[in-house]
Amino acid sequence: MHHIRAKRFLVPVIAALLLVSALCGPQAWARSIDAKSVILMNFNSGFVHYEQNADEPIAPASLTKILTMYLVFDAVMQGQVSLSDQVTVSKRAAETGGSSMNLTQGEVVTLKELMTGMAVSSGNDACVAVAEFMAGSEEEFVRWMNAKAQALGMNHSYFANPHGLPDDSQITTARDMMTLAASYIRDYPDALATYHSLTQFTHNGVTRRNSNKLLGVCPGIDGLKTGYVASSRCNIICTGMRNGERVIAVVLGAENSEVRLEETTFIMEAGFRAGPRTRYVANASDLPVAQGEQAASAAPAVSTASHEISPARASSQDTMHVSRTVASSSGPLGPYTIQESSWDSEDKALGRVRELEAQGLTAQVVGVDLGSRGVWHRVLLGSFSSRADAESYLNGIAGRYNLSHAFVLDNS
Image (cartoon, rainbow, N blue to C red; front, side, top):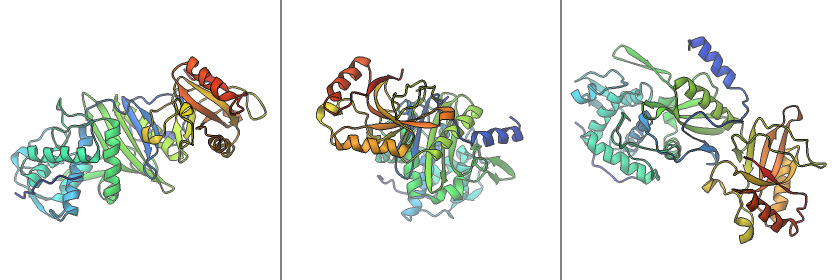
């Protein structure tokens, strides 16, 4: 047994393929995601494109295995173990319930095989074998897991085992899972090609298929991990790269695997086509468009996206109601906002934002797809919980900034 001293460290197949192929095309965003909690992020920039109940507690299920693999990679990097190390499978490991890589008691496998078994087969048996090999016991390894989670800033997560099998105390959030995934990919990017992008793995004559059904079907997808327990239903962390931009989506609590597939494909495609600072807003249809030479007539919005702009040199009065930046983003727009103008191109809208910033105002751009009229880009000021607050703010800035043409939008 190899011990390491604990450290404190930071529907039919063809039909399904056709379904995913269709979903990989451009999708309108005019609804919330059919899952308990969601977060979508551009890995390159760290910009959060969308979130939905991202801080809601939920069981991680087999997403837990990413943290287990993280600890192994850390130990390899520190020279404490090698992926070629031989591991003898214990009775306890071989008899672990749930999904497995089909280990048998007493067999000897390499650490790399166990890692593949975790990533592809979602082997709970592999997790126990790894924990015992690394730390001497599951219990000690779990202590390492929680120390690592805290070091990463996963402050709303607790792990009770190395595999994610049901335990009432085991909990996480979509935001914490995003923190884990982004850090893992940043530290060990080769793990995607070596482990997480594999579609199947055979051990002891049994072939297990990767349950991430986007692999090999939706272009650019190369990981990461799915999970299921009854209390959370279907979870996934999905990642992929197109045109040099990596996107990560966390979708937790989908009702079944089909919903998980559909919703994850939907949100990943939204991430791939997003601009560098695109902020998606769900259920914001029927936003009116300003009248005038820069405006189109109002029409139902079938998709919306706002481009959050970094805060300008606004006065304290102005900053009371402006939307927060990605570092402390609170998600979709509030019930009310102020429309300053609407433009037929994003560049024009962003140009207007820069003009407003130069005057000391913070603005954002929301793109609204008007069908045959194309996408119009609205310059918005603030996010308010009530019409009275929005009108009060507008009355305070209209004269000072020559904004008599601006008006309050009802997003509810």
